[in-house]
Length: 125
Image (tube, rainbow, N blue to C red; front, side, top):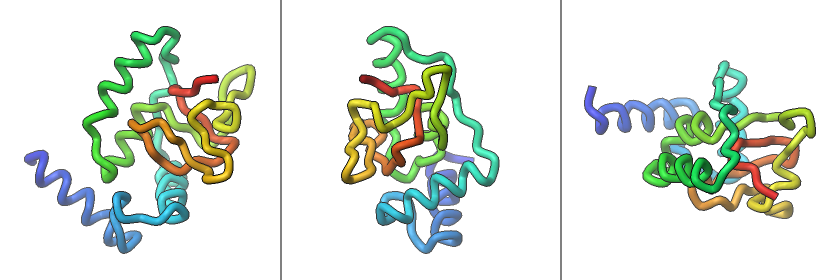
């Protein structure tokens, strides 16, 4: 299957379930899409955590070309979780990219709604 066919199928799947694609979805609808993917068994890549700027940049390089409708890929690559992570219980609330009042991850490569108790491996203080 070609990349264009994959893209079309992915968009049709979102439209069939939600009536919109992620690129067209409201904040609340995007939150629902994310929660539903995890409810459906989505597993993300939480390790390895990028310890250096070089490792962090490599993840951004993978995420940067993804469009808004590649929501699943963004979540998998970024190691998104719907709960705090690690022994320190890191969460979006303490991340420098989290906009508290908007409930939004402002990292340009993600640019997604987020809840305070969620986490991803692009977490930074």
